[in-house]
Image 1 (spheres, chains in turn cyan, brown):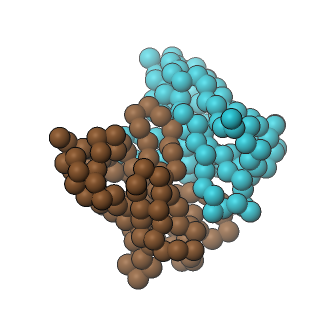
Image 2 (cartoon, chains in turn brown, orange):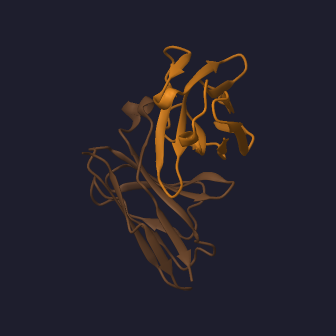
Image 3 (tube, chains in turn yellow, brown):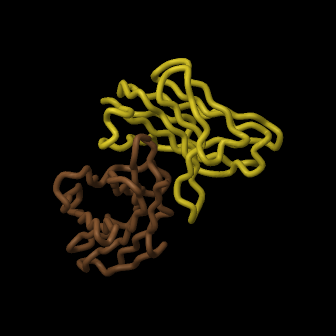
Length: 115
Length: 113
């Protein structure tokens, strides 16, 4: 079955470390997204990519970086510059501009904790 | 700019009672509207969507929502709550040329016996 796979499910980071969250999709979707979820704040957009080798900052991009070298993959790196990285991270994909009415398909999330 | 406001961060209903979760949107152009459900430590699952066809939209698990342009609302309802409906619900809007979804802050639904 097609879907989005996020790994790992739980991740622990030490102060000053960079960590990378994986997101892979086999839906043949053009667009991919990273959201951060904190209690009471809903989902906030970190980065998104409409096409391979291109991506744009979302509302809270500071302290994060991404790459889109393959259509199927959109990894997110949480850098040491992100001062409060403890959160639940969700990856999503969509058909893209032509399929705007379809909405997004979400992965099952990665919970990142700073220790 | 597009936005959604979900009224009530927590809603509690008795099993068998009506569920009503409120969502108001803001958009300068005709929007697409979505409701998603999230169970603990999981991703979001699409419940239903409004895409400018019928204003009353039926979704999975017995949920439905009505698009009311005059009230800029897209409230989610279910006639009879089940214990399994306990989860967090998010309303989202997509409008204009962008394909970005903007989410509300969520409403946590509690179902009691």
